[in-house]
Image (cartoon, rainbow, N blue to C red; front, side, top):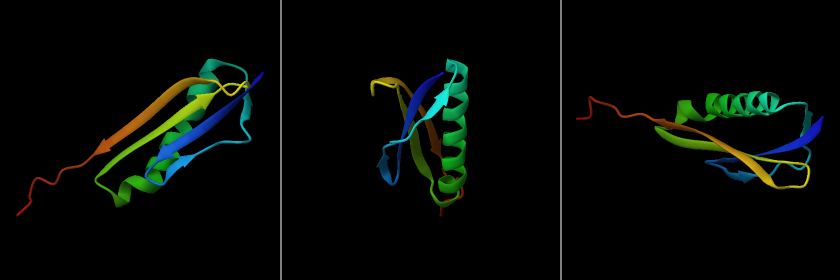
Length: 80
């Protein structure tokens, strides 16, 4: 098991994870990232037409090891 930290970057600005969680595999890290992105998207996307949400994963030494992002864009076609 290794401890990973998940820093969130969204419309509210960067949020640094100071606690982290222990995960046993890279697959577990990807599942945690997906969970975070989906939770944030569920809260933010209904109130905006454009958003970029990203998560930077750091290892136990604090080194970034992965960046994942979700991009949302909505255009209304009936603009008058």
